Image 1 (tube, rainbow, N blue to C red):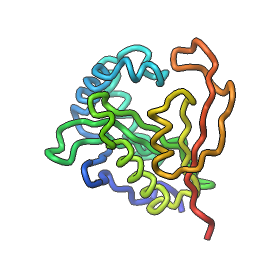
Image 2 (cartoon, helix red, strand yellow):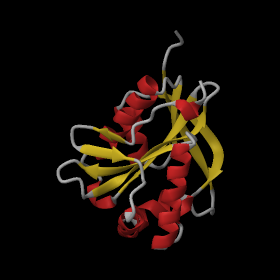
Image 3 (spheres, helix red, strand yellow):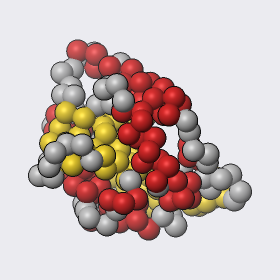
Image 4 (cartoon, one colour):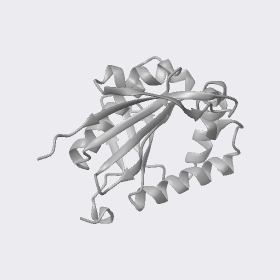
Amino acid sequence: MNPLLLDIPLQLETERLILRAPLQTGDGEIVHQAIKDSFDELKAWLSLFQEIPTVEETEILLRNAHIHFLKREGFRFLMFDKDGGKDFIGTASLHRIDWDIPKCEMGYWIHTKHGGHGYMTEAVKELVNFGLNHLAFMRIEIRCESRNVKSRSIPEKLGFTFEGTLRNDDLSADGSMLTDTCIYSKTNEPA
């Protein structure tokens, strides 16, 4: 089946979170503020955030994410507190999709003020369920720098298989040194 024909919900829910596609006017401003508030932590791990983007750049990033969503090339969800639905928590996405297998990679970041409360683990668990059961992915992979203990703890808590470490695989977020990449996966068994 052509992935464009797949019915993909624009919103998912967990016990405490609403995960929705980035399609509302003003999302850029909300996400931009979270990037500013969390900049030191994001800068350490994400090359995308070596400088604070403008509100306009953030809005463009989210609109492009929505285009990828519609084209079934990636599924980025913005996470909000279910109690009131206004407090932005972070983002989680299924990206680098290969529909021939089918498989994908997962990425995420959290607003620093919401770290340590299990929100990201809850969101990733929901996206894994969505990917494996609704989209019938055969493999979901999480890659993270070996020194990023917080990011690594999520697949470890959720029972992902640790497949190994790729040594000298990438550059640090700031491009100053070589880093190692840890690979985790969850798989579906073929029918």
